[in-house]
Length: 469
Image 1 (cartoon, one colour):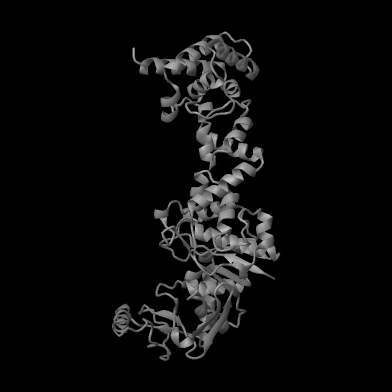
Image 2 (cartoon, helix red, strand yellow):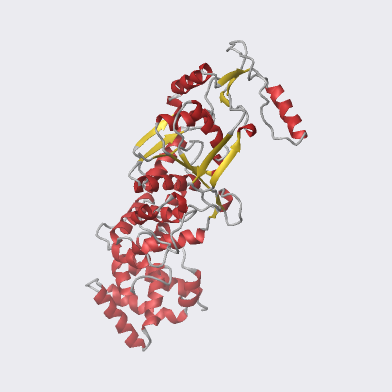
């Protein structure tokens, strides 16, 4: 059975690189009808936090990356790790080491001075030491001294590493806690992980982990080490490139479908296709199609993809997200307000839900300022008379609907012998604060009579105050 795992360390948010790894694991599992495991590798007790665990779980939930097993926590499996460490010692594949920190630092300095690769020299390897409560020792894995570790990586191809290049790594620290390379091996073995997909910063750990698995006579998974994500400047993606945490994109108003679509294209492709439904991703995904080269994150491309989803997803889904955002901003609106009509028009022109909400904010709250460009162009002296006539006629209007409002606007254009734009555009800037809205008669109807009248008066006052006397 195909079984993958996503195993983040809860030392921060779920970042984009981790989310992409989780997505690749999830897609492969879904395609192969396998099982997807979420494992929280929280053995770094100083840096792991409950808040980071929550951030990981929230990010997975928002992206819709559901897991079949877990979350498992490594801190709850210490007894099992110690059992395996004792087993390795008993069968001669691990040993106690009492080398002091000072000795190891001196060894490292001398090796580096000689331009050698820093590594443990096996000082305690054959001393047959026993645990001594009076001393602070560690346990090391007895790496094979000869032979070659070979594996076929789905991304990098065949990798061969001579055992002579690997030293005896620590599997139990002096404080008694197991190390990453030991705990991850035990977990993969116990959870029957068949495929390990992870970042290529782990590729140097793989030969060591394979040797531990072989010492435990456990099956060796297949591996796929995915290149890192770079920023536009070719350097590793970080805060300086913008948001890197998944939930930051939620807060910014991006759609989870769009972020998934963008992430899947960072390191995987299917011809020139850019937009994929979730089912298409599952059907088309393959490990052997993963790219070997690092991918560059491009915010403009993400924005384009997000806009495609804003325009193509069911209107009701977008309206629900807009309502959600309005509630978070505590912007009250009439439940009978025709939100769908205005959302449908604006979603063609914006990139995110937040931008959409900002664009229609004039429907729910007073705007502080007019758009500078719109005001400088439209709210000038020639607009004063059309607005004054509109104020008078709208104030006496008994039936407040788009047809009646349109009739008033037509009356003004006929009386002043001007085009529709000379009346409609000043009204638009007056009631919305900007130069774009749905048809002005619909916009004024949606805003309601009291708010529309008040805003037209405000625009008249603005023009009167800014016009030379």
